[in-house]
Amino acid sequence: MGGPSAEREVSLSSGRGCADALRVAGYEVVEIALGRDDAASLPARLAEARPDVVFNALHGRMGEDGRVQGLLEWLGYPYTHSGVLASALAMDKTRAKQVFRDAGLPVVDSVLARREEVSAGHVMRPPYVVKPNDEGSSVGVYIVREGDNAAPLSDDMPAEVMVETYAPGRELTTAVLGDRPLGVTEIVTAGWYDYDAKYSEGGSRHVIPAGIPDEIAQACLDYARRAHEALGCRGLSRTDFRWDDSRGLEGLVILETNTQPGMTPTSLAPEQAAHAGIDFPALCRWIVEDALCRD
Image (cartoon, rainbow, N blue to C red; front, side, top):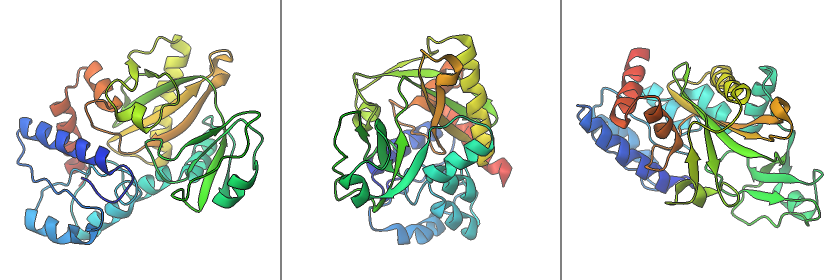
């Protein structure tokens, strides 16, 4: 847990919560909290811990993009969640969108553009959204609406960003455990579902099951499962949607799939698992046993 990404604090919260739950489930747990600059120490720390399985609670770059997965495979440790290719694909929003299109899943149009180009003028007709192509948790997201000037991107945004058509509507999400979609949650916020709304107490309200027509709920379950399979995900994933309820099924689009959903007290995947009758220790146990069985 921890690591160098913008989601470090979320990872630490996820990791501590999972460690506590795994102890409740009967496992012996060693916590490895990586600092921002000590990733190179991971092989030695793993050798000292000698784990039967590694529970990967890292989020964002390094932990979720295939790099730590490749390291763990090279070192020969079974690990939780998705493998190298699925992790790398899902983290690259542009490539993930192409995988979804090839699988017949609905996504909005998008382009990759240089940060300076996006700051200088519109590279797409507004309204559109600007975000890093390979970060999560709504880190560095800009919304440009009709009539707005171009987005003045901050210097900490990457040199290349993704610009995608703005999808209006309601925020929905579905977690998939193995090959089982767990449910549909609607996320209600006062504004954009940004980092603070995701992880601050009271930042958002989760409605489960979502108060939506059965046709839309079934489509979310189906699309999330198909997205999970198309990317080659393993273990637990979560797919996020926007639904324009004025357009019916045509208004439902996939935003992205997260191969390592947050496991904090306010996180959506554990909440959906609980609603499906799987408490938090049982969820963490399932994830560990799934990793061991794959090995």
